[in-house]
Length: 113
Image 1 (cartoon, one colour):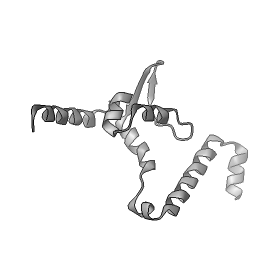
Image 2: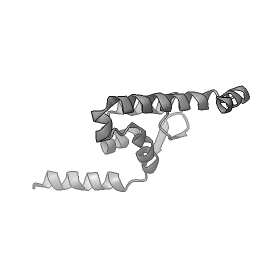
Image 3: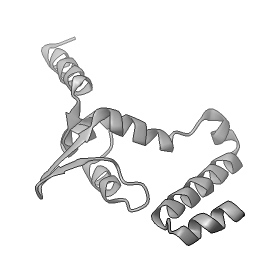
């Protein structure tokens, strides 16, 4: 392996060891595009946890990202049986909506059902 291969290995190791990422670094760590990460940060239903310092500085904790992304994990069983995936998505969507609209009346209705 050439010198550039060793440099890439060092860069990858540096990213894995980081505790906090900016959007560009998280993009490199995760393999997701920066635009995708920005959309995850702004997602009303399930925003990517992050720290905002002022108006421009964003930091995402690596462990928070790793935990958050697990929601999107699709097992081999779910790939074979799409009904499981659909049910999981509907249940997750219901939970998110219930959290967003948690009023005393919603809590009473959800307990009585």
